[in-house]
Every structure is written in structure tokens, then in C-alpha cells.
Length: 94
Image (cartoon, rainbow, N blue to C red; front, side):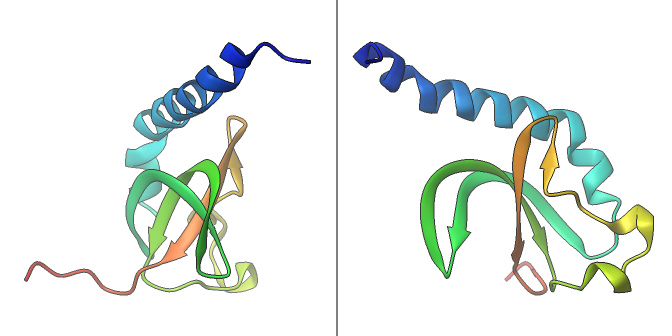
């Protein structure tokens, strides 16, 4: 059985790794058509958050891969960090 302290540090280590990947790839991701933002958050499944910390890529709308130019495709994983693409629509300052 694992040491209880390992369970306590795993979320922190996971968050730190995702933050590092976000900082390294954010500018590149924001250049892709349809990408509105990049963040760190929880993976969403059926509209509900899970406990998995992921790189969140916010898009105006989800588009099938076949309709995207290769340079606009967002991978499902970057440097071992899972990516969750979340549709947010158009964001405007209110």
C-alpha cells in the first residue's frame, strides 16, 4: 500500500505539471483557429467535473477533426498532460 503522504502530494504535483505545460504551450495554442483561451481545470464529462486536472483549451465551438486544417488541430495530450477541449462560444467583455 502507498504511503498516505503520496496521496496528499499527487494533486499538487499534477497541478504543477499541467501549469508548466500551459505556460510552455499557451501562446502556440492561442494561434489556432477557434481557440479562445487556455487554462488549467478539471476534465468535464457529460457536463460534470471529474477529479482529473487537465489542460483546458476553450474553443468557440467543437469541430470534427476532418474539418480542421492540420495546424488548427488540438491534440488530446501535450507532453503527457491530458487536454480537455471545452466549447465556450464567443466571449465578449460585458
